[in-house]
Length: 160
Image (cartoon, rainbow, N blue to C red; front, side):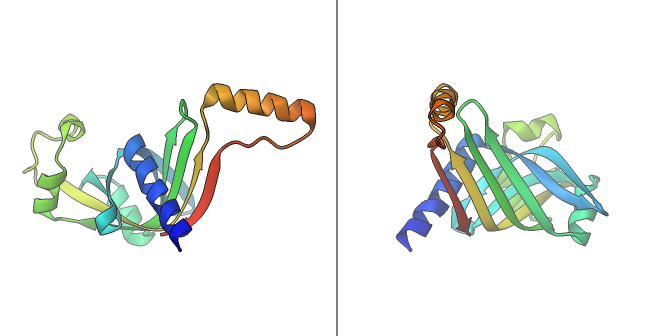
């Protein structure tokens, strides 16, 4: 149990540190991904995003609420994939709580009536935490000449 809690904490820590993710939704038979600024709130067991009521995400999520969040720090070789259920909310207080500099690129202020909250409740996550690009390359090269598999750092599948 403690190991599972440690893995879940690692998911939250990595997601918070990386901050941005690709949000993947389903649109009919197609998958669509777009970059989003994530607000991680482990106390709520949720990831929050600010979105616009006019975007197609709302319609996609209403029909297909299962989504994937893919966080990537390619320089640090740290990756997190979170599967969960999304919902759109019109919580004006939460919008004001989450209002930050990135949102100013899309809206004038937190009181803009077109802003909505996209809440993702995670059900499953997986992370990869490698020691970094240079060390990873050295380990891969050493494994290639020794016909072994490289130790590329921590990875875990986590029920959230």
